Amino acid sequence: MEMELTRTSQNVLFDEFIALKEGAEAPSESQLFAFFDRLPAMPAISMLGDWQGGVLSRNHPVEKQLAVMRWDGKRFNGADDVNPIISLDDAGKRVVNDVLGTASLREVVCRGVATATMIYDKSPVFDHFRKVHPNLVVGLMDQKGNNRPLFFYLRRIQ
Image (tube, rainbow, N blue to C red; front, side, top):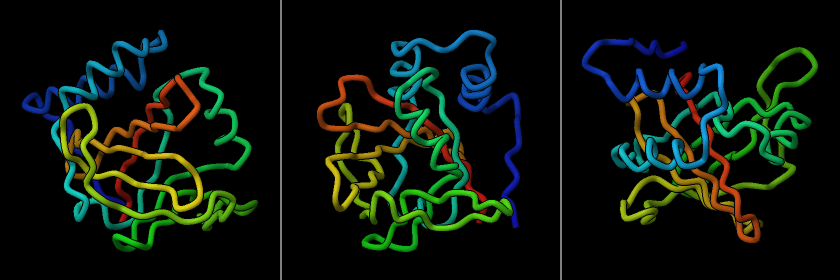
């Protein structure tokens, strides 16, 4: 069952997220950092479940890689059982893609805030999550050797 996201006048962060995601112009890296830094921490336990994703950083090299993989999101089964790449198969079904292996989920300090972080088991990559809404997070991919961060989002679907 898909979780519904409601847009209310009280949820300024949600409105700002929509403006960044759907704006005619690509948001700058400084705009994305400013938005991310205003978001509250996401507890690791709250990440459990299936999430569908999308990219906020436009024209980022990883964006092309995700498109080739037909990336659709992530699955958090437990602290030591995370499928970081869920792809769509030819029939449009969500399937685990093992191209990058598995991951762990912990709370790690990122930009001064202890928040849910997915740590790839075989790659020097940390995905830090901040909460827009209980069913919507913004992620910041911190990849060793890549000076340009990737901002993305995940929307809970289960």
